[in-house]
Amino acid sequence: MNIASYIDHTILKPTTLLKDIEKLCNEAKQYGFAAVCVPPNFVKKAKALTANSAVKVATVIGFPFGYSAVEAKIAEILLAIVDGADELDVVINISAVKNSDWEYLANEINHIMPIVKQKNKGIKIIIESGVLTDDEIIKCCELYGAAGIDYLKTSTGYAEKGATVEAVRLFKQYLPAHVQIKASGGIREYTFAKQLVDAGATRLGCSAGVAIVNGTPVAEKGY
Image 1 (cartoon, rainbow, N blue to C red):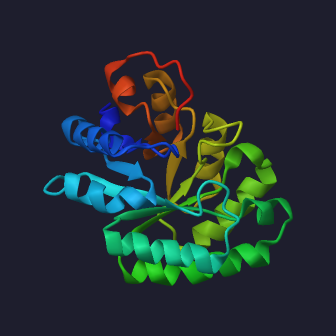
Image 2: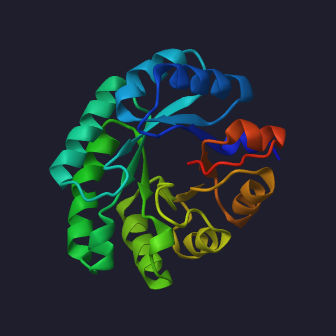
């Protein structure tokens, strides 16, 4: 398995430096990763660094907690698109899920989708599966599957619990066939990465992409 082709090579820590972005993009080109995922303020630089390569540039919206207003998320999306983002990883309002406010969530995604699709960009919806019940995950699969998103994504990497094989299997069971799955959060070695792919993930968000490909142990918690 060419695990590199599944990886969104990611750095989203608040202390990210320009040299970190340069290293990330160079590694993505070297190893053939699917994309780099960077903070919004580095999108323009990442786009320049990955020019003339197959590496896509992704960024995050409403990150990491998802409770910013819909209008704020739309502003972030528009700015990211202007800066050259190919894919948008949008955190939903997780508090709304926990309060069963599905009307709010439907309104949120219904305002976001036309903008993203009009610009022909990819959208990944992050639901933070580690803090949700199975029933809440299933309802998210139904809501966002019907909305026409490109990927449903497990985690931000900031919750206690990140990606799990069980969550990916649940996604696979309840999502429409056209919606892909991105697993992220706590993926630090090849065996686990392969288990997630085998369960149905078609993208992996991780900061340890090089270590995963090379089979090198990673001690610290990473996105």
